[in-house]
Amino acid sequence: MQETFWQKRLRDVAAVLVVGVFMFPLFWWALTSFKPTSAIFDKDEIIWFNFKPTLVNYAVTMLGKSRAELAIESGNTFGIGGASSYDSRQTIIDSLIIAIGATALTVLLAVIASYALSRMRFRGRQAYLNWILSQRFMPPIAIIVPVVFMFHYMSLLDTRLGLIIVDTLINLPIAVLLMKSFYDDVPVDVDEAAMIDGASRLQIFWRVVLPMVKGGVAATAVLCFIFSWTEFLLSLFLTNSIRTLPVKITTFVTSTGSEWGFIAALGTTAVIPSFIFILLVQKQLVRGLTLGSLKE
Amino acid sequence: MVSHQVPSLAVDVPVSDTTRRRVWPRFLTSEHPFPWLAPITALILAFGVYPLLYALWLSFFKRNPITRMNVFNPTWNWGKLIADERVWGAIGHTYLYTITALLIELCLGLAIALLLDSDRKGYGLLRALMTLPLVVPPAVTGMMFLLMLDGSFGVISTGLVSLGLWPPQHPILASGSTALAGVLLADIWQWTPFMVLIMLAGLRALPKEPFEAAAIDGATTSQAFFRLTLPMLSKIIALAVLIRGVDLFRIYDYVKVMTDSGPGTATETLTSYAGTIYFKNADFPYASTISLFTLLLVIVTSSIFIKLFKVRF
Image (cartoon, rainbow over all chains, first blue to last red):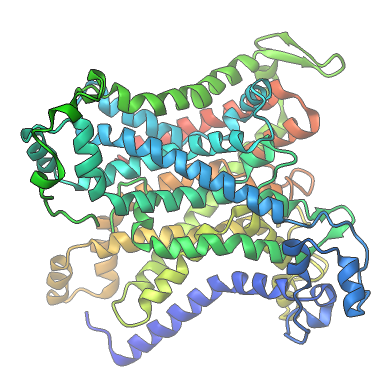
């Protein structure tokens, strides 16, 4: 069914419009982060762009300056006061450590386990795979209360290591099933040829098959990083002083009013690493989201 | 895709190097999967299965709020759960939320996938842009929509009011009748791209021949869609609905951030109710009971779905 010229143009316009609608909240969010506080709340300035862009929101959240300091510097005393608890540098560092730690641990464990699940034939293999899959469908809230108690006894509560462990637990099923699908793409003949040449399983794994699924390992790592980076519930329950970005942002909403400029600035910052990474693994995204069962 | 070239084995694997092979202990070089699977099994047993059993054990205790002691009383929490009207309200909200979101996201996702399924220039970029909402932290998405839906200075609310589409005295998130719709809006924005991506992958994998045959036979576009595209996509649709549905059922982030179950209990879902019991009442046994009950509903609902639509991974 060939499209006519006007059908093509109609599709172009509709496609751009739809994608535009989906991009609008991101655009608005980024725009808000450059607005002075007055422009966020002023009715006449909400929809239009008649405000003076400012970097105050980033200076407070990223450089740890207090708003009073900045106000005096610039001579604008609107909304002066407020503590400097909006400094989010430590939060960003903690978030990075947790996400990178959890990613490394997840990938390490998944790369090993899924090789066996892809290559070895043993009794209960399918049942084991189903068990892993079922872990993906378990709501984290079902285990969170006992995990708080356990972590309390193990002194893991409110530590980065504790969050790394639970993030790993949540990401493992996806990583294992995804890695298995990448191993399954490599023909078994490769292993068999190496085996005939006298290589052991470990040698085949490390020297032959693993180098062939490097791209898959990278995609798995990126997805794990994003899932840990965006995780909210576990961090909310398990930490108090160490905060990840998504939880830190919600603390800017207070009973005396929300600091929307700071929230938007920190939110924009939180989104950037995910965007950079996701563009790197566009091709493998579908496979990751469907736990390896759908390839593009 | 992984390239399928066969590596040059003679170079990579030293065959006659017997000294190197002796380094590894026997159980590491055998065919047994135990050493490969032991680490993840241990981790999942310790931090996944054990807490689940612990939660079950905990649900058999009654918490005394004054002495803060837990007393063994196996039927207390489960009886309380069944008699608790807020639980039934939360079940209703959870199912309403899950089903509405699934229907809208699926239909929108399929429509947008059909729209973006073109090889012309620029469509690759549009498809890439469409994936961006997926990786925004859900808590940030919640904040974004909280700002945009705010009754007095939100851009969506102000826009709707100034266009005369919405009464100004009726803030979306602060009214019991529309708060859930506001939360849904955030969910739909973030997760419709999930459906779009999966449907696009499905559409791209469809064989060309049936469509060419249909075109020769004079089928209209809508006939081709309903008789060919939809049936051939049904497996993928079922898979996408299952994965998304389970995630929707345990919705927590948006509700917590945007409305905190309110106003009143208008947007209270099962997980957010469990969170409230945990944080506000500190009744850990009852919070565990509600969480386990959520898990039970997830298992029952998804099992029925898997049986009904024969979903296969």
